[in-house]
Amino acid sequence: MTLGLKPETHVILKRLLVYVRPYRFVIIPAGLAIVIYALVTGLVPFFMEDIFEQLRDDMLGSANEADGLLGALKVPLLLAGVFALRGTMDFLTIYGLSWVGRSAIRDLRRDLFRQYLYLPASYYDRHTTGDLVSRLTFNTEQIAEAVSNAIVILVRDCLLVAVMIGVMMVFSVELTLILGVIGPIVAVLLTIMSRAFRRYSTKIQNSMGDVTRMAGQALRGQRVVKIFSGQEYETNKFGGINQRNFRLHLRMVAARTFGDVITQYVVVLGIAVILFLVFSGWLSQDINSPEFIAFITAVAVLLTALKRLINMNATLQRGIAAGDSVFSILEEPAEQIGDATSSDRVTGALEFADVSFRYGEDQDEVLQHVNLTLEPGQTVAIVGRSGSGKSTLVGLLPRFYDVTSGVIRLDGKDIRDYPLQTLRSQFSFVSQDVVLFDDTIARNIAYGAMSDASRADIERAAEFAYVTRFSAELPEGLDAPAGEGGTLLSGGQRQRIAIARALLRDAPVLVLDEATSSLDSESERQVQSALTELMEGRSTLIIAHRLSTVERADRIIVMRDGQIVETGSHTELLAADGYYASLYRLQFAE
Image (spheres, rainbow, N blue to C red):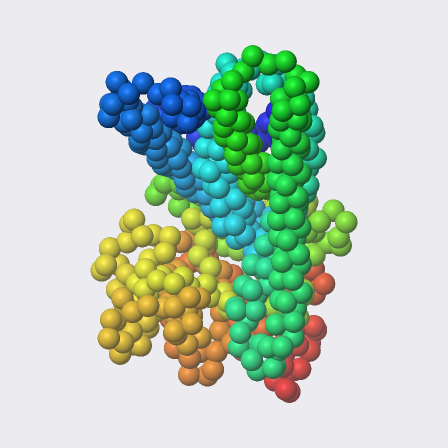
């Protein structure tokens, strides 16, 4: 019997076995339980033979009365004992292999999540968060169902089919061979159904990614949806995606049910042919009535096993399709971060030497021949209109992307020669879009330094960053929840937590990317005070739209269309009356 497995399917199954193999100490006894289950089930037709022999003898009055009560209890007691053993083996099989399957999926899901965290930024540019979350949740659950349930049924019922064929041959080889003619027909049907199952499974999994993406996008932007009365628009948009998912699931159900019905009907036709040949007398068979009933019982058990195998095939194909999507992510090249030690701290000297950058080979250059130096402890501001390349420039420092040409040096060494973890440990970032996790304020401050930061260190950073000014008013203090994305805090409070986090990291190079652009005057004043503490003794790159915030920088770099067009102090640039001066006048005229 074939399940329509393609060559690449065997590769997927082999990769799944890598996750299953560590738990073979459970697989072996579970496998033994499967064998016992199948063999014990094979006794059922023989019991049916005994039952019908006794019924025949009773009807003909030829029963041996000497057997008495013991004879009457023989078959019922054996039947009760056999089915008790069969049930126990079935429980051990299902529980044991399910434990193995869930353990394997737990490990696979862990590896997939870890892989997400180490994938380069360019991967996230090409894939939606909804699709990635769907693969981590829905797709891995499809694999879990295949490994846990489908493998149990596949092994148990394939063995059961083999045992039943053997039992049928004990009663009648000729009848078994006649029924065996339908085997190739069933195999062809399974192959056709497998292709349909795989095709629909892949589409369903992609559709679930769309559902997750759409729902996550609408929920994250719920305030925008409400203020612009977009509820109906989002509902209708989600409804279209949800309806497509609904149709795909129904097609899968239709394919599975139709295949189930057709396969069973083919088997029943085979049985009907046998009944006709036996009842008509055309087939010479040395088989009595009890033996024939036992034969038909074995066929019925085989038919039940075949039905489970057909239904399992849909589950198995879903798991294979899901495994393909998950393993494709695990095969993506991840960032090699290396190791970092406390002795790897740099002085903070930076140099951009003829740096150019584009996001894709078919896209225009975002940065063109940028040359810039930053001495240890110096503060350099980068200004320019939106889209001039400011954020892209500093995004190259931790190697979220690599330069297209040119070189960036840190302490005279090409940043590509540093292990990523060592390189990134030299930078602290405070941006306009502060990322806070659904945890306490203290843990958000300590993020990235949780193993090294003491409570005293956290409180000291919170004090310097003016976090304690608002946390002291909360019942839980620094242990108060920040909410998902910091939703329980104001913009200024989130910024101060980000500054405290950067203070605690104590990196030699600080990058401030529009750190105060969205704050009101009072919040900006407090945050600026905290930033002054943070910048002390560090090399600092400031990206700013508000030119008033960079007037005291040691040097100002002015960018336009990915190029540096001016450089100098605030006073020098105003005196030059160039591009910076025009930006300054335009901003203060607003």
